[in-house]
Length: 568
Image (cartoon, rainbow, N blue to C red):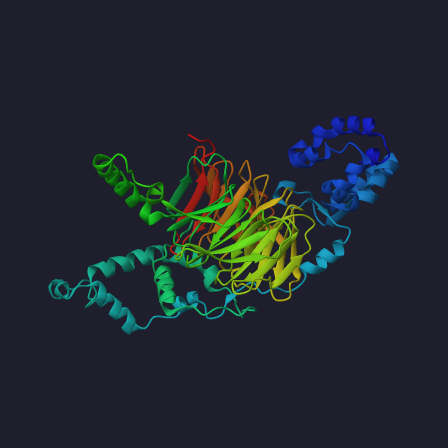
């Protein structure tokens, strides 16, 4: 780039092709962008070149390796290399002997010249716990003996109670309950260890005014929580995969409701379609029977296309739809588009309710908060915004990223949002003050997906190269780098108790990772690089269907959606 800036374009091309091969394994996408720099004007236009020329690389080295480097520079008297180091490189020297760099996610990263500011931001205090008086707390309260006896009597019929003999001296308790107690005692230790992370998470007060929840909705959620399947490395989730066919590359995004009953898809023709999974099978059967009868009665008046459609069609956007998301209870749907607007739809009335305008460029992502009512959006205008359903103007504007904000995700306690950007960083923002409280540096390509652990302590991020990183929100450091996918990671999801992480990728696979083992290893601060990585539990190939969306239900069932890469 210095040669190009000096007008020596031919010499710059020779230099580039001579040393390109040395960096292809780790910086292939950056090299492809730099290859297009052919004039000094391109240095100002291309954002990556500006970033390289205005910032420094941070390289982590142990004290032993750093001493060897200094000895080499003094021995060779290489003034050119000294100039490059002084101008473009910052060393972070740590005591000890050399270790494998593969165990550290950010052993080589690019940072701005305001490195002290980034470190200062990461020292701010954050409260990563769960909300006070949450529904999960209701289930954690101890159950009285009278309630236990009452529940036991409900599971046993009165007639069976008279005829059934007493077993083991436990009067009034059926055999079914005794077997259940034995089963619980066998797996209880594993379940308690897996679920303790959520139960012991600290409780914090909400900074936003949260909406009131209807009694009927609370009861339904509590019933789902009571029926939740406990997942761990021995008990993996059941997965239901929804496949879009014949989309011919027109499907841009998809989302699944919390209970898996509704699936939405956003298309390039500005349309939004919602499928009710519970009625699809019935429609197929009834349409085939009615079609035979109607064709036999009158061939001149066939059934209309509208009656046979298995989906609800929404029109309103004037550009491609890039993101969709359901409210926690499925009664609302949000969509964002290249027309720089966000629209709120009613899944019950099948109509558009509100059009939110505020962004100046395409809106790449939109996400409802865990409690509904509030939602966050990210855009090409390098900002993220927080909205309320009842107001058409944003409540907060988060500005600080150096490039597009590609994805956004809410924290479990609704006090923070995380944003992933094309500038290869992830930021955590305080929703009350609008300030950035964490900067996560380590990815080598644009961030495409984010997920928060249920206890709010960890965050997972996936990038364009297929790398996933697990971050500790308290320290701002990477807990476990994960390299398993061979293409873009489009979606991430934690199980309800936070023991498993599911990832979906453009390489047509869904992968399940053991989160508990990796976080436990990181707390032990093992020096082995392999123990600092997430353990792959299972890889589920989908043949030729890239995975767009993953969603864990409250009962810990995993729903996934994707579109066939080829049209039949």
